Amino acid sequence: MVITLIFLMLATLVTIFLCKKISRNFDRKNELLVNREKLLYSEQEELRTQRRNLKRKLEELKRDAIKQAPEIEKPTKKSATEKLKAWLEKKQNIDPNQYLAASQFANEKNMNLLSALLTLNMINIQAYEEAQKLNLKD
Image (cartoon, rainbow, N blue to C red; front, side, top):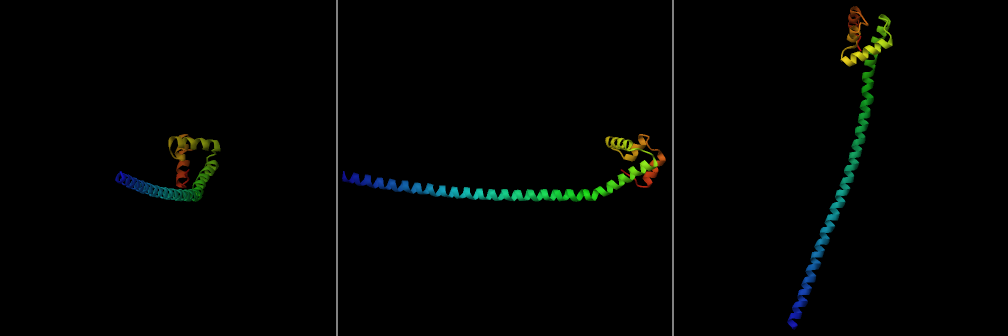
């Protein structure tokens, strides 16, 4: 009976020791998982801030590109259309409504404005050729 008590006590102590060891292993793994989660969260926050910064930079670049592109293109196109429009009003007596109708027709038919004016009989062939010689285009 004493031997069985000793074995029981020994088995109890071994069981307690093994349970504590298993519990410590679970605690260590839990700590590792918590640390990994914290690292992942911090990396995710860093990536979010980087993405926001890159998005802001992209928006700034787009704004700069939009600001620079129209400045380069607008004067050439506007001056050409102003020249053509002024020339037509002066030489051919075309009013702004006729000019607008011809430009809409040209856009619908995907053709040159001078060709549209000629097609709609708003200008004659001589005026068309003269405008082409002067490089007056829409």
